[in-house]
Length: 219
Image (cartoon, rainbow, N blue to C red):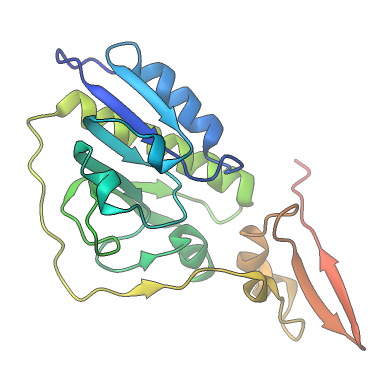
């Protein structure tokens, strides 16, 4: 998808972790947005300048209000059926729950976490065999599609408020990477699918020792 809007916007994109897996996707997105718009990519929120749209992609911290005030609209991509699944690592948590069809939405950022009005909704379709690199690719591709769709359809989009009681996913830490070795490989497979072999490998303890476990697909 290309950016075909007849309007020319001043667009900023923020990724607050330069080592994030999403950076290559955001760099590709920036090139495509730049075909029809003025676009800047930032890794520090306080470097952002005034403009029309700020896209917050892969951000790991809540962005201060004084930063959000610099742009007319601040947009976030989040992978859950909001207001269910607000919070952290929604894709990982839903894979653990056994879900293969994961909602992904683009919404207006507000001071309260993941509470803004929703502009667009799509789905990440999995077949249950993907490991983390494949899951992230599908997530990254859908993120690009949502952002370009938003820019192409603006200002004709009508946002809708979130309906229902919110639920929250907690931030994943090393403790969440521990495997329950009383379970079979099949029972642990969804857990293994979301393991980052380099940054957050799976681990378990046995007979007073800690063991690291990594997983790769060979075909």
